[in-house]
Image 1 (tube, rainbow, N blue to C red):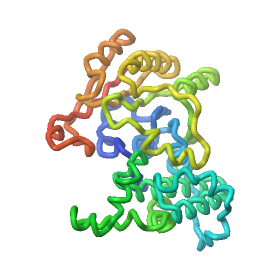
Image 2: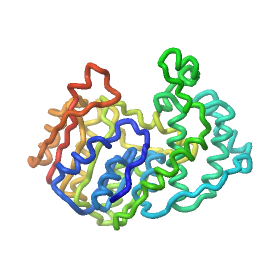
Image 3: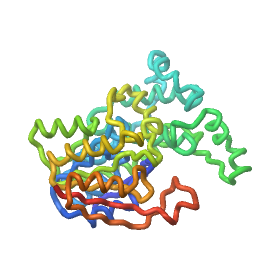
Length: 337
């Protein structure tokens, strides 16, 4: 029995519908490219089902997750008692000072400096498990798990007494050290590592640039799975999690933007035309309230392929309001070229 996907805290992850998606696919084995892997919930499900998985994302934080959970097949993290003060230095503190009173208090940024320096002396997949845990710790300490929160709101929600009076929850975990969160989840991340007897790989590249690389390398796939950040959803992933990439100076300078309404369809058509050069099957995740509409997206797809299967199921999105929860459906379009 394979291990379980750990708690990653990633907005919009497909964990609850991942098995449904797998069940609707026209293939049961082969090589799959998860082009926008995000928190890796679909990549992990593909891996559990024995596929050879290539997981890609523009964010370094997601790349670290893919290295730790998808590409890694046996290594587990061991942490001795870290003497954090040994790893602190002023130079890196100055480089991370932009976070003080923006995302964290000063003493927390100093801890982050030590943990960053500690990570840089780790080797191989140990490093990426540690970075995945640090990423989650950074998110866990910020209310609503978004680095786009205003500092005034962060301070307010981290006031445990105020939180208890207003919400009957102290949310004390926001005020725990980063290392507390890392140690707390380390076992679940280690237990999530398993070998599916495939040579899985992780990438941090722009989607179009990655496909062109595979074209040059004459590498093909049995299926490309795409779940881009649609304009109508909580799509500011660079804002939500980009602070982690900035800490490690791993931000990509140029990416294809799928978050804008006026350019989404053009980029989507361009992407599909590139995908068909490396795979005969594309599976697309979307929901019935997305923008552009399902009808508009389907219309563009039909200009490229008439062979489309559409599946749907009711799905509750945590980020939607109560009035919307009962009208949302998760859709899967399977496109055969």
